[in-house]
Image (cartoon, rainbow, N blue to C red):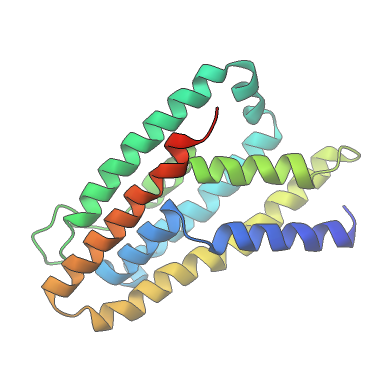
Length: 200
């Protein structure tokens, strides 16, 4: 890995980590609903769960989709169904003491497991391994890519939860918080469009 390649990959990791997507939308909503502290396990689950995914793709998990294309289709629709379920839960959130259906933030294990059905994280991980991991010294390069992605991704996802926490002060009335969470749920549903219309 040359310095130029590391810098280029760092830019890729930042852009893909900071831009809106299912993880960041849910972290924004969680920060606004529950606050930053209770959302920390969710943040860590996203960050470390994604890092494990990058390693797994580097070790050959991504090739399974090439060998068995039907798995890619299955993942796409399972992921879409789960995103719809999460959007429904977010829309019903009314705060920590509210009557909504989401009484607690996502746990570490739930957030880590979600990475495996989140199509955006698959695209990010496969892009990192295929475009930025030289074959010469592959295993070490894969570890470097994973480490850089972990270091860049962590603050990015935490920033979304932090911004949600700042919004919590504005959304101090249950009706406002409910409207915000409905808007976040609609954004999550809107993120399904490219998932369901992309070519296999």
